[in-house]
Image 1 (cartoon, rainbow, N blue to C red):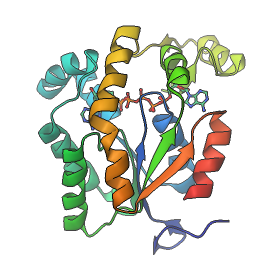
Image 2 (cartoon, helix red, strand yellow):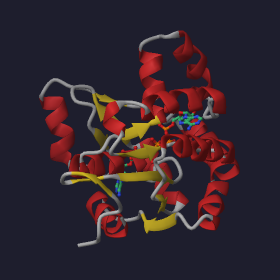
Image 3 (cartoon, rainbow, N blue to C red):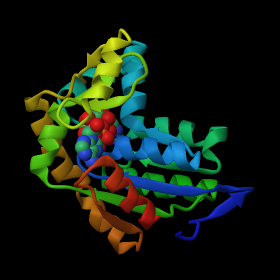
Length: 226
Ligand code: AP5
């Protein structure tokens, strides 16, 4: 059993990590599993932005077009969201950042914010997977309308897909999971987010996990690295 990354209270292991990786590498999937196992929140900027769109807030209306084009929402807006989220009570014993930071500027902002909060980052974990696999994971991704469970028409066991439909749910596809937007998102990742690999490597924070194989295999490798 690996030693705890950091301990702050009782049995709970404080763990402050960034999950890095291209769209479809499994950041959301693995973050949810880690959250369930370690009882620390997944902080997903993508989910927060989609919630703002669903609520039709002014800010959601601004983000909608940008996300549908596969581009990045401005660093300022994202920093505002993250600052508020990390100040919440449930983030005081650790967090899993999923989809943030995504630019070098965001990484610098995060570093300043965590300095102010006195909560140093433990690691940035890169989920490393072949680009060919990503397209299939993204075009096949569906979310069950009943419980938000992440599924995949190519990879999920049929009984999990059927369970959603038989319970009266729908398998929803994300607006940005069409081929054109996926291509844009992958280009944006290469250009704007990939430089973070070196950013964290230089600071001695980078861990790399092979994110090919099944969800459980990846989770085992991820857990062994933390
Ligand atoms: P966001 O929601 O963060 O999307 P993303 O980074 O493109 O990542 P994804 O959610 O597509 O993929 P994932 O790695 O989480 O994979 P998942 O686990 O779902 O961002 C969306 C948009 O919001 C951005 O384009 C941008 O516009 C904006 N945004 C967000 N954050 C921002 C920021 N910080 N700054 C600026 N703009 C921001 O898995 C994918 C599928 O594969 C699922 O179906 C899953 O079931 C399946 N799967 C996962 N792992 C496996 C496996 N091992 N085997 C088989 N199937 C698997």
